[in-house]
Image (cartoon, helix red, strand yellow):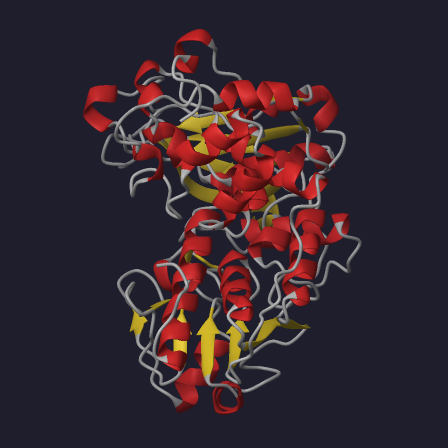
Amino acid sequence: MGKVTGFMEIDRQVAKYQPASDRIRHFREFTIPMSDAEVTKQAARCMDCGIPYCHGPTGCPVHNQIPDWNDLVYNNKWEEAIRNLHSTNNFPEFTGRVCPAPCEEACTLNLEDAPVAIKTVEQAIADKAYELGFISPQPPTIHTGKKVAIIGSGPAGLAAAQQLGRSGHEVHVYERESKPGGLLRYGIPDFKMEKNFIDRRVEQIKGEGVTFHCGVNIGVDLPMEKLLADHDAVIYCGGSETPRPAGIPGVDLHGVYDAMPYLVQQNRRVGRENIDSVGWPSEPILAGAKHVVVVGGGDTASDCVGTAFRQGAVKVTQLDIRPMPPEKEDKLAVWPFWATKMRTSSSQAEGANREFQVATLEFVGEDGQLTGVRCCQVDERRKPIAGTDFIIKADLAFIAIGFSGPAKDSVLKDLGDKLTLNIDRRGSTNVVANEKDYKTSVDKLWAAGDVRRGQSLVVWAIREGRQVARAVDEALMGSTVLPA
């Protein structure tokens, strides 16, 4: 906790944004950092609530010790604060930027709609630690002689690599793309998180003895059989990237795309890379001077909205089949769990037209080119209401309704030809592995992150990366000191 009476004396404040009219002109982060004094005051609001739901299973997947580091920040002990934060979270500068902060929903002060600004304080601790030089490589003092391969360098793969590298194992990370980061680098727009934060973490992890092999598509460029034969353990952290099929007529029209290729392309442009990417369309997808429709109501859809505005879209409409949620939740019914209520992302606040309780019936076009999206209103069971059809003008449409599992044309295909890897086929193709030891049905193969649990939050990927590292370390060495 911070100051005993802080929550009664200090109002909740969070970092402000650049005006929408300014921030849509660039792809950089637009949050205006708070001063150290302001952050300290926000940390002081952490109250002596008895049971801190913020870091329990309802609040924080990695179990950040939030009251502890709030108290350390309040007392100006930044080095101890980052040490405490790193004990549960390898990459607080990532989660401090892109996590939706279920911890704040679970905060006791959220009963009064004024939770502690946990996410703001977390980001400030990480940024301050870099500024003061508190973050540096922690190479192992011993070497085990064990060799571990990690497929994928997203948040789960990076967390597992760092934990195992520090434990003294020889760790090799294989990444399909030209640079490490996975979803963090190629899926999340720079205006939410600039990529220099990934670069400096990768340099730290390299300094801890981990080797990165980029541009290597496992199962295509390097067979799984060889990878398994050459390593004592292999961890599959390939993420969830197969788009969920929309089943909407007209998806083959020019101008209709899945969301992720669009986001990947723009991230590669900002990173000054060639837009061509393994498994994605190579033709340029640009929203400048176009009417854009985004189908879906989640984070990926919102990222498409913000990207389209920055590319110069004339109008952006977002379609959500769910009913418009209430402005405020019933606290006594749902707290401390994540509540369904009206939320407006920074991208949506930049001028998106949001349509709720609307189904996408068909993409319509002329001569093979998209010209509009035919929609209708739906009832509470998401069934179309007769006579409510309407058409939204569209030159470009993105489908952002989620993902059904990992890529099928690399690891899964290669293993399917030679080894039996159990797959969850109940609406997805996620790799089957339990949450205790993360082992798959293939000997020496573990799985963690979205490839196992399905599409989820970055913080959950970090959690699973840490846990699978512990499981692998214990399997290789007979015991482990890595945290559970």
